[in-house]
Image 1 (cartoon, one colour):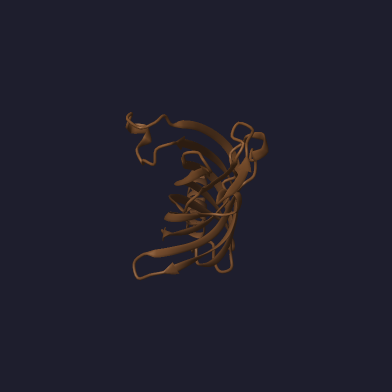
Image 2 (spheres, one colour; image 1 turned 60 degrees about the horizontal axis):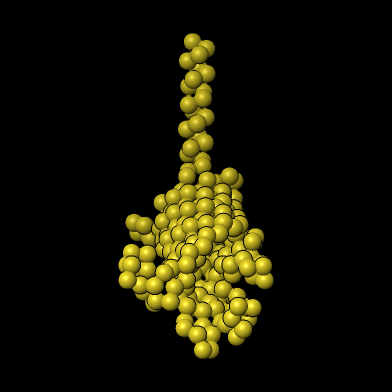
Length: 214
C-alpha cells in the first residue's frame, strides 16, 4: 500500500511539473547580415604584395530550438542551426577569388521573458554561447556546384571549430492556429579569430530570425 501511495505521489509530482514547465520547440528561418570585418576587410599579404579586399554577402540559414522553462521569466533553449553565405576576394591585377562560408552551430541560450516563459509569451531578451563548426571554400570559379563538377577549378577548403556568442531580443506573436516568433540578434566569434596569425575572419553578423513556436 505504501509503495502504491509513493508511486502515485511521484506520478502526480511529474504531472504537476510537466503542466507548469511545458517544453517549447521552434523552427525558424533566418537571414544573416555580415558586419565589421566579415562584411569587408582590406589587407596586404607577403605573397601578394597588393591590397586585397575580402568580404561576404547576406547569408541564409535555418534553426531548430528546444526551450525548457526554468522559472516564470527564464528559459533555457538548446539550439541547432546552420547557414551558408558567399563572398569574394579581389585585388588589382589578379582574378577574383570566390568564397563560400558554411557554419553549423550547436548552442545553449538563456531567454529572459518580460511576460511568461512557461507559455513562451511576449518579449524576451536572449543571450547564449555556441560551438561553431565552419567550412571555408575558395575558388576561381563563380559556380554554386564547385564540389560536384570536376570541370571547374580546384576548390581550396579549410575548416575551423570556434566558440561563438549571441545576444538579442525576440517576441512571440499569437495567431489563430500558429504562434510566431521574430528575433533579432548579433552573433560574434569569440575564439581563434586572429587574422594576423592566418586565422579566418571572425563570423560576425546580425541575424533576423522568423518562425513558429509550439
